[in-house]
Each structure stands twice: as C-alpha cells, then as structure tokens.
Length: 561
Image (cartoon, rainbow, N blue to C red):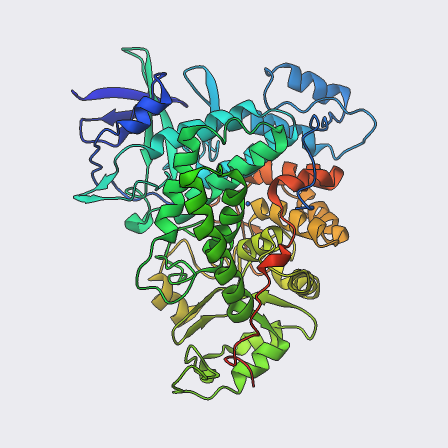
C-alpha cells in the first residue's frame, strides 16, 4: 500500500505508510474476518502520555432519564438521538446533568455512519497525543450511561468493532502477541481523497513502556454482560464470534505454566495505571477485574462442548482465586498486627509467614491508616513483597464482583468513611493512597515528571472513580457516602470543565497536565447520578456472593499467629 495522507475524525492529519498499524474494518461478514486473520506488523512509534442484586431483573425497558429544564431541552434538540437524556419531569436534578449529557454527546465517534465509541478527551487547548482515540477502559462508563439511558446501539457497535480488531494478527517488532489480546484503543481515520474510513488500533506498541493492556479484555467481557443484562438480548453474546472472543481472552489467563498462585502475573503499566508505578507482580486492579470477568464469562458462555470445557476451568479458578485474595490480600487491624509479629526464613508447608515478608518492610503510614474498624485489599502480594497502598478501582470492583465477602465489603466502606479526608478530600477520588515521595518516587517511578507526589497516578484524585464508588456504596447499603461524594464533585466539575484528574493531598488543584473535557469524567458522573436515582441499574455491573465459592477448607495455618 502506498503512503496516504489521512485525516482523523476530529480533523487531525496523520501520515500512514504500509508498515503502520492500520486495521481496516469493512462491512464484510464477521465470521470471514475472524476465520481469516491477516498478518500485521506493528512498528514502534513514539510513546504517548497518557467496571448482583441477585442478578436483579433489569430486562424491562430502561428507566428514562430526565432533562432539568426547558432550556436544557432546547440544548438537546440540537443533537440527534443517541446520548440525549429522555424527559423525566417528576424528578428535579442538578443543573450540570444536562451539560454533562451535551458533553458526552459531543464526544461520540462515528465510523462509516455508525456511533462506535467516545473520544478520550475534547481538549483543543493542548496537544492531543492519544487523547483523540477511543479507549476500551475509558468507554466503559460512557457505555453504561448509554445503556442506562436506553441507547444500546453505540455499545453494541463498540463491542463488535473491538471484537473484529481482536481477530487480527498483532506483532510488535518480531514478536506476535496472543490471539486474545484486545486493543487498548482505536482511532477513526478518514482519507478525503478516497472518501474512505479505516480504524487504527493500539495493542500496546504505542503505550508507555510498550505494555499490552491486560485490563482491556476483562472490561470487554464485563461490558458484554452489562449489555446483555440491560437489553435482555442474549443474541449478541451468543454469536459464534463473541463466544470465540471470550474464549480467546480467557485462554490467555487460564493457561497452565509455572505459576504457584491463581492470581495473574503482570507488568507495570498494564491497566488504568499505565505508567511505571511499582504495580508489577499481582496488582489488585487486575485480580479484581479478572475475577469479575470470569464470573461474567460463566454466564455468557454457551453450554456446548467448547464452552463447557472453558466453564469447568473458570469454576476451578474462581474458587482458588477467591480463597487466595480473601486470605492473603486482605488487611485489617488484626492482620496488620499478625504481620508485625512475623518470623522470617520459615520453611515447610506449615510456615506462618508463607511469603517470607519482612516485618521491617511495613511502612510507617500503614499503622495510622488502618482503622480499628475497617479493612481493604492491599495493592500487591508476591514473594517477600507486600504493597500496602490503597487502590480504589481494585477495592470497588472487589465489592461489585463479590470477590469481597459481605463482611469485607462493609469493612472497605468503614475504611472509606473513617479515612474520608485522605481518600476523598475535596474531590473524589484518590486512585491510590498514599503517594510516593522523594527517594521512593525516584526509584520506583524512575523520576517520572507526570507522576510526582499527589499527582496523576501517584495519589491524584480522579472524578471517573465516582461511578465505581457509588456502585460499591449502593451494593453495600451506604448510599449516604455516595451522595456526599457526588455533591462534593458537583461543586467543581462543570466549573473546571470536567478535568481528567486533580492534584494535591486533598485533590484541591486541577491536575498540572490534566486534560479538560475528559469524557470518562463526564460519563462517570452521569452513571453515578443515574445509579443513585435508580439503583436497579446496578444489576448491570454487580454480582451477589456465590455461596458455593466459600472455601470448604479451613484457612491455612499460614498468616495465623
């Protein structure tokens, strides 16, 4: 293919040659595309900066959302169809809701006339980098907002387009990625000469550190289940191509190897925290998403020969994973005291300190952070290493997926309430706590200027996490905490033009490199508001505890004093 000059969806010119990662998606039969993968070589490019109520029934038509006033109705009349909230006159809502819907509408990306996702950010005041792309993880709150508003078309299109991208052979230099890898993001390019649109996808070859997105496949499965649950339409999930896509993702995770733990071993930068932040190993975010994706897949896979083989492996892994996480990742005041008293260099299966963690490695801050009532899943557990940092996404997903027991879920809420100033402050919500500073920051982040203390991934406050907190609060029966957080966010978000993140210990300052009009900040707020208004929406992304998943064995002698 000769070099061509392409213009992106938002008018940005791009030059693309024959070796570029162009994934051209046509209207031909999906089965033919999946069964005949075309080889693709991806060359290196410059780096980019950079989620039941007992399976409650929500198959009835989605509750119509609302416009706040006659003026906002006129605003929406200027847009067509998708993304516009429907009239719901008996509820008075905050005035920024209508503005949020307008912002979400503007972010929609079309491909050959069909809506296929939402752009990461619409901030024309700074360099776009990869913020002009549709990210899989970023689209999840947007997708939930559309589903809750009775607009499933864009979600279905997104699921099918990303599924088609999965089917291509993916190479970074001379190495071929696994067939199940889902893209981190994609972008629509328009060739004005041929009047033709193509998709360009990033599978990690453009990411910080060239790391493939482990979380993308999990989010895709979770979103497919949310679509099925919301619409009551199982025909999409039952397509042979979707069934194959689920199995390919799970094949990457369930294959046998040298692992002695049921958790997934991951590189730094493989998830929402996509830069070097010391989360390599077994990060809580990936383990919680893995657990939830397995539970979703168990419902989505058909009971045929291929599906049954996969579900058998899923059930075994779920039992092992839930036991491991609930036992070894959980930290409360008793567990902290036990670790403080550990002996080291133990040998044999009766060892108390199974991972040979050094008590002297306990950070000073954790003794004050853990309340007398409350607990949380720590960031990472691996040989001789425990990362005691709090990570919001992993703990919220643990509650929604019922990886956390009801008692643990309640304890996580107790922790958030008792450490409100540290974890919420003046803007919800800390992505992790505490921030790394000084020598620790230099060693672990490599002196990353974007992840300085209390900024971005290093203790920054991310409004998108509001939807996860709200969902976890509703599921745990702590709705007042969600209301409090939403009211706090409403004082700033619109005024600050929906920034990506906030900086400072209290989240007082708009992030130093934060993009404005960040779509998932908008969508996260809308989803939080809609779930609060109609808690049955939670059924899309929530599971009740599986009583059969409680381990029959007693807790190991390890980690007991």
